[in-house]
Image (cartoon, rainbow, N blue to C red; front, side):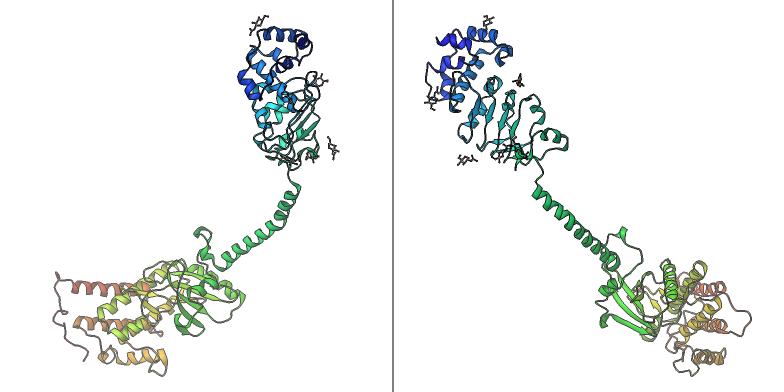
Amino acid sequence: MASISAILLCFSIVLSISHVIIPASVLEDLANLKPPADFNSTIMTNCFHNPSLRYCNSSPMDLKEIFKSTIVASHLCNVSKNPNCVESFPKIDLQSRPRIAPLYLSFSFFWKYCPLSILTIDLSNNSLTGSFPVDVLQCTQIQALDLSHNDLTGEVPQESFSPLTNLTVLNLSYNHFSEIKMSDAEFFKTFNASSFLHSGLLPDRKKFTIKALILLVGFPIFVVVMVGCFGWLCFGRPDYLPRVLRRKNMFTPQILKAATDGFSRKNLVGKSEGVDIYKGTLRDGTEVRIEIYLDDISRESKRRFVEECKVLAQLRHKNIVRVLGWCNSRRLRALVTERVESKSVEIWLSESDPPWKQRLKIVTGVVEGMCYLQEEWPEVGYDLRISSILLSEDLEPLISRFKLGDQSSSSRNIYKFGVFLLEMVVNRIPGDEFQSGEAGFIEHIRMHYPGVLREVVDQRMEMTENAYDQATQAIGLGLMCTDQTSTQQLNLGQISDMITQAYESWQVIESPPHKRPHGDRGKGHKRTQ
Ligand SMILES: *[C@@H]1O[C@H](CO)[C@@H](O)[C@H](O)[C@H]1NC(C)=O
Ligand SMILES: *[C@@H]1O[C@H](CO)[C@@H](O)[C@H](O)[C@H]1NC(C)=O
Ligand SMILES: *[C@@H]1O[C@H](CO)[C@@H](O)[C@H](O)[C@H]1NC(C)=O
Ligand SMILES: *[C@@H]1O[C@H](CO)[C@@H](O)[C@H](O)[C@H]1NC(C)=O
Ligand SMILES: *[C@@H]1O[C@H](CO)[C@@H](O)[C@H](O)[C@H]1NC(C)=O
Ligand SMILES: *[C@@H]1O[C@H](CO)[C@@H](O)[C@H](O)[C@H]1NC(C)=O
């Protein structure tokens, strides 16, 4: 009878129940059925005959759970259309059963006591989602597992496959698993590629080819573009680079072009032999003055030009214009200095009739600048014409023209200073009305010295007695400096002492607490007539 056959067949317990009551659904059966009174003894008998049955090794034995698993097994065997569910249950066939497959998968107690007769599990084409259904792998005896055509994601638990020693057919095709790790590659090699078609596990050859193509073609292009951009930045517009990457003091033609609006005429502020002078604004807002040298020079001279620029860029003095850098390209050679919103001494003299004290202040500043250059940078030549000395807003003179490639000698500098000093007092540009130029100008003054100096001193200068005395002395000093026949020329130190003294004595005269020897009564008293 039924109960006897149940003892003989490992699986028959299932039938001993399901065949008594015909259930509406597996869920209903699970809710309603109670294990029969003799269930314990039936199982005990089964285990006695076949101790390898899964439930025999579970401890403690949960009779209710085991009973439930037999109900599920009977249903599953039936829906899997196994020909003889009393005798055998060799295959779970849930292919294309998306409505019930997830339900059976959710009965973890069933998988825990997975009947040993099952050798094949087919769960393909069920739109299963989520991670790999590990419960299924508790049926360690299976030989074939098909999970193809689902929407499974995540990693395949390779280590959970190791007890499945009899598994020979595996199909994980058409899923969305994560690509295998290199360390897992050995396991996946026991099956051939047709087990993993479009599973996401193996690197997609087509995708790989596209990636490789992108890498092979795209990367070099990317590199070329990057190098190009970087090159353009480095050699064209380094002012766009971060400050640390910029080469200090280096200007490129492109930077200068941008700063001057493409060297537009409105920025051209001066022109002299071989030099165009532009004003401009750098990207960071700095106002600059750009001297562009038009003459073509040899490679050797260009090298020297850069050497000199490097020196100029290091000059730091309140009476010397800051050299910000230079440009030395094949097309363009230029010196970039800070731009002082100012005029030259020449224009200042002709426009504003400055009093002696202010003129003396300018001369003092120029001497200070000269001393700095002589002491620190004796190799730098400079220009002292009143047209090239600039004035800052607070009337500080700025030596602004440097003689590149023109080694200065100290006696030549003293001579130039002499001329400058005379011009400051006399207010006449050398060469203006003297046929023999500078020499004629000096000679003209010398003729009037010291007797009739009133003739030559700047007529427009309002002068006190004291100022007149100093101006006279200044002419004397200027003539001494320009006297090239004299065997003993003054040195810069002596000149500096004299000028400083004169300027300081003026300060004493000016300041109220001190007594004013002549200056006071001279106020408004024109000595120039
Ligand atoms: C089942 O019966 C055995 C004796 O046959 C007994 O030792 C065991 O405790 C019983 N198990 C349960 C869960 O009733
Ligand atoms: C088995 O399936 C058939 C239909 O395929 C159904 O008529 C029968 O009731 C099922 N038996 C059990 C026990 O579920
Ligand atoms: C998958 O199942 C659907 C119905 O659910 C069916 O139309 C389709 O042919 C099946 N595909 C495969 C490959 O079995
Ligand atoms: C694999 O098959 C052999 C022979 O049928 C069997 O003895 C063994 O227990 C099976 N392995 C597993 C893990 O079930
Ligand atoms: C892959 O394995 C299947 C069955 O395991 C076989 O039918 C097929 O020929 C194999 N393919 C290759 C390329 O070896
Ligand atoms: C796995 O399933 C896919 C799609 O159904 C099929 O093309 C492939 O041959 C199968 N692979 C194996 C090893 O059965």
